[in-house]
Image (cartoon, rainbow, N blue to C red; front, side, top):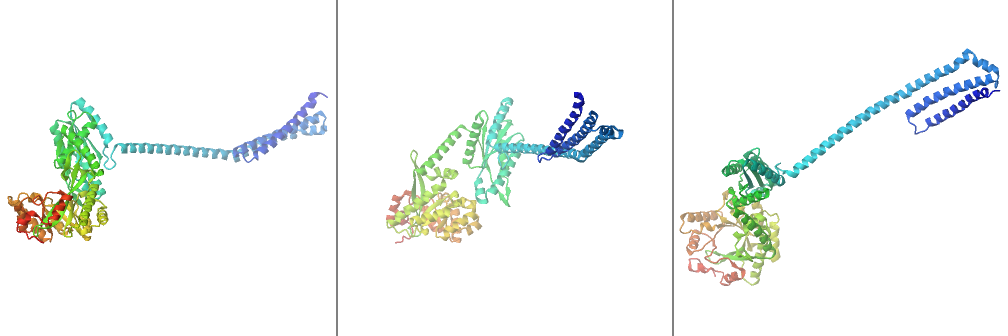
Length: 592
């Protein structure tokens, strides 16, 4: 028997064994839990194809084995019949149908699902791209917003100081090329803090917003308007014909600010002080121009506010002096360089001391003894007036306590202490005063608080609430410098006050000025009608004292009796019988 006769059927049976193994392997893989649906469909198709091949290999293996005589020859004859030969073809057809069915039943939905998932994935990808683009846009807008905030004022939207300096530099380049006049205008709203203190910061913010709008309307579109802090604005004017044209712009701005501000049903009237520096003659750097315009603005305020000042070189020296003086003022408070002087007040009817006014002085280490007008305005501006005022109150009470401990009968007199506008607005003023009185054991009746007429009328309703609590506790209240402000008689009638002090400007020319005499008579009559005590300030002559006494003035104070003196010299007045020497020669009744 030849080798090929044996090898042929064996090869078919070997194929049967191999395809059977492959079929089993396909089915095992298909049943694994990690096999995907698509892979299972593919393995099913391969298994059907393997089954078809297995059947063909088995068919031909049996047929060749019969031909070779390994099995009965009848089987070969049977398998060789035309009808039996058709069986493999039918199996192929059946497998093809099953494969087609499997693909249609399983594969096509997978393809559709895959396409659907791909479409969803594309849509999700597009959505992610869109969202990313939106986030990037928001980030760009946020960066731009923060960049804008970094260079603009939040309240008004105007450029801030940093951007202003850059704008000034750009305008300098333009001015150099075109040989134009470039001016920096430093604008400060006068007494703006009173609006914040009386109506609140919300009202103040509205005023600042309106002021910013008016400033932009007062200049050209190409000019820069900036807010650099608080109530301070800066306008940069380029291309003006000359300095006079710059002054006209400043006047226009000032007039705009004089128009009433309608805020929360209030008609507010404010003004502005403007300082101007000119590029070239007043500086060539942005910082220098701005600083010099600021110095000119301070000169405008010193000249009475609501005015315009051009920079001059002496203004820089003045600003430096103010800065140095402010620093020295803080040192004076820390090193206790302040002293109190006292000026007695005398009853014009009895001639006895009716009270003493505590007046602060600054014992400057270089300039000597300074009066309040030399440093109190600066203290008000810097806010140091509040701790200085507390120092005055504490030392006045300490001195009064020492006088009482020495045995002087001071029950019928009070120490007058001046309150500034900042002190009056201080939220802890009441507690501060009562705490110090308690600390030194001073009866409330022996303290009198003085408020200027102008301070009182800044916010009379708020002031009335603060002063009423003092009066309820027995502290007397007096209006200082009466006649120099704009008191409303209706307010005056309702305010908790005990005394009116006629300002020295109305006393100094008595009896030579008929107008001053009439004003003094009117103030005395007004006080009488309101049942208030009247004090005449600045009395320097016996004629003035006699006029006031004859007209019904209750108390007099001035150099006729005594200049302000230190506490130890004030003791001499107490030891002299508490009477005024100048009154011993008048018609005053001297009480024992």
